[in-house]
Amino acid sequence: MQRPAVVGAAGKREGGAAAGRRAVQRPTAGGLCSGRREGCAAVGELGTKRVAEEDGAANMSDSSRTIPPELLPSEDLHPLPMPVINLGHLSLDSATRYRVVDDVAKACRDLGYFQVINHGISQSVMDCALEAASDFFKLPSETKEKFASEDLRRPVRYDTSSKDSISMPRAFLKHYAHPLSEWIQYWPQQPPIYRKYMGKYASEVRMVALQLVEAIVEGLGLGKEYLNEKFHEGSQVLSVNCYAKASQSATTIGLAPHSDHGFLTILLTSCGGLEVVDPSSNIWKRVQQLPHALHVHIGDHMEVLSNGRMKTVVHRALLNPEEARISIASIHGFALHEKVTCAKELVDEENPPKYKESSFSDFLDHLTANMDNKHRNFLESLRM
Ligand code: OGA
Ligand code: NI
Image (cartoon, rainbow, N blue to C red):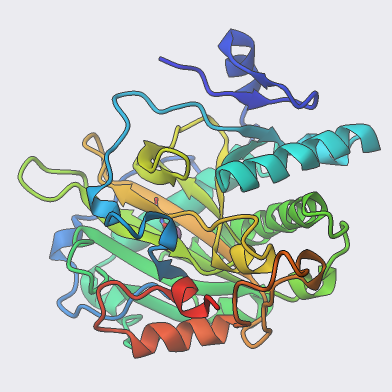
């Protein structure tokens, strides 16, 4: 099997055993929960209503517009190596930070995705969040369906599938997570561990997102502090997904191709299944499952802010043939009504603004207005 490429502080991509070893971190002792990770209840039996689309996810981006993403070829057999960033190096000396910022910027420009290790979230916090999610999906349908709603603006929303008619074997719970003190009161009280464990993960993953956003804007040449306040006051949506195990006869698609609306998404998953479109070859790439790593990809609003220098990532989830799968996507954007524009520093005569301004709220309006459309695309609607 190919080893993942690790982008070290030296900025070099390293393969081989050393890189593999470096990627592995020890879970911290004395976890908050048992660390037990089980699959979810059979999703097929859940709920009857098919409500709404993804309030964290826009539909497919233009990068695969010529060929429908469903028809793009997949890579053979083994996942290709993908950049791995050691986030701890961001807080070392300035020369080291500079190199990591450069690695992050390069990954965002060339691919739009990478993984992070040494991110400061302990294995037990990650396991507990997955366990809380898994336990929620095991609850009786009536309990979960109390959160079902057609209104995309509800702070918590549960459904068993999107209306795209592809994503059938999936249940999801979406909720706002920042500011936590404002939203946590709406989160499920069952299972009893849910608020505590998901809340802890939500606030820790937000810290990772803020560090990454700082590195990305610095890598764009905008300075580390660029829009700092707006990012700190920004929104965080957790999309908690539960996919059934793939069965022989049913579809293998758990979540249809789409891009996420925010600046960036950080994804924690219980096992493999995520695929991203590789922008240079236009093939589906399976995302490697590294111990203790988090997957990161950029979203529509980063494409807008960077005035097209960075492209949103089209991704999908396949059902895992071995086991049911839990994923927690943390989507980070500006506050609901705060407009995102192309950074004026990245606009000049040769590079006129490519996108209209828009907010998270505009995105929700777009989804609501396009509820019956199969291929609604938010980013496309912003293009000038
Ligand atoms: C999402 C998403 C991928 C996954 O929730 O927006 O892309 O692997 N999830 O569940
Ligand atoms: Ni997504």
